[in-house]
Length: 198
Image (cartoon, one colour):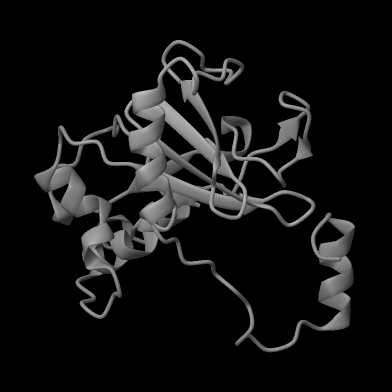
């Protein structure tokens, strides 16, 4: 694909984004596939963005985790589209203005029984909250425990409390398909064969 873009002379007018929407669990934490968990085997996915040289020098790598929802604002920013709902979410802005800053990143899901799950990563810490008010908290030190096996919530109560407050007060928007047209039966069957849908 990149060779064809180059052949057509479009490389300096093209933004290339490579990402994955989720990883997969293989019983590292008792779960198969990618539902019902916020562990890194599901959340930690590749994000590669190649910007045209006209946008200036950008670092080859970004040392902090980011949310995939920032990709949209990043593309809007790169294209000069000012109607984006959250222009401050652009990774280009972060790269240019906050090279040494880390900010919490969030993820949401739910258990098989519908119990909400919400997680955040801030620095080396990852907090996962469950329950209607996210009252059950699990804390990991990702530097010391990259496999997320040792819950440190009881050993680090102050970190757990502070991150728990951030977790509870941060609202995340869920993307829904309520306003989308109905999915044709053939498409629905193909998605079901891939493990999506009910």
